[in-house]
Image 1 (cartoon, rainbow, N blue to C red):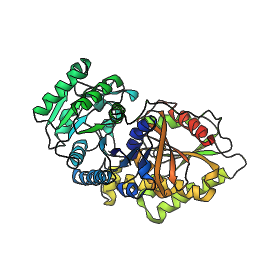
Image 2: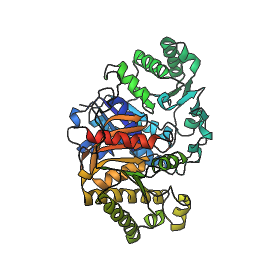
Image 3: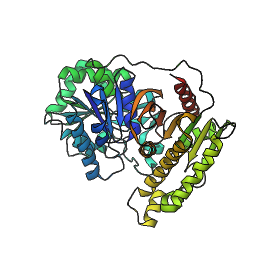
Image 4: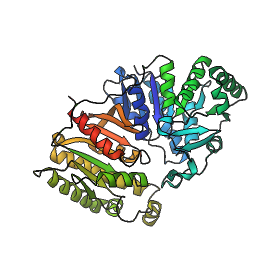
Length: 447
């Protein structure tokens, strides 16, 4: 029976937390929604279950209901320890999603918010979020198309989103050790704080916080990008030391990695430019406007890309990589403007683009067969959801990461065992896409 359960606001977030548990020898699976989790086969043999609520861009009331529903599913499945996985850049309605989980897990529950992910150079100091040495509001996430973040002081950000009192434990207390953290957490609780934000700059800091919470014997809901959840599980004796699982096999020859790039960030654009410097890697640009318009126009554009890729795969020298992208060529679309022009609900244009990428990948696999494909690589949580949904995937059994937040798993259900990597649009350096492709070929060769 799964003992650890987490609800993430998108799929790549779920895999990021799941991989930390999987690297620590916990049998871990990530599901696209609560219905899939409750219907999943063999879930009673898992140690940890993560559910994506796909709620990050939703209005507050809808996000609340999504997280509530997923939390209740985890309770029905017997989960004892709960986590609310949040984005390292605090996008979405974090506060309302905390409320949704706390309302379901007991009146004595307290949310301990540790937004740090030191592995990815995401830290919290004095309540202020710093991303790779840059204040959060000065990073590209501040201009995110769907969920921009305009507040750098996390207690103030949460106060606007939750009905609960917020407390803050600053770094000076963390550096004094576990007993000092225990004392300060207890003081905040006695002040009536039900949501307590805690500074951290290293994994040792995160471990100190986790050990203090365990010593207090609180009903803690871990609110974090993954490290705090993992340190709590380790401190409770539920998982082992974290280790990597890099295959020793040589690259699988004669196969192709398929990439669906749904992210439009400068980071992703640069990564794909570097990747495509290799003449064995080809790019198929998919026009976004037909996908947004929908109907036959969208299908025609999708099938154009499918047929072009199929011809390449069936040639004497198939490409090592085929990249499908909608936002890395031409002028970047204002998707809010596209929604307004068509009278769409907010976010529909983005959803249709991602659904189009999902259709392309699923139709191509159906046409050429799994045996020609080394693995899948998606950028952006919404893209990964749509690709897996279109393919009829049941869940993802996560195993490892290439770098933190570039997570490796294998599909369960349709195309069973096919390696997959999901990566957020802001993660990595210029060569990360190349490293992911290399790792997928090694995973494909693993027997």
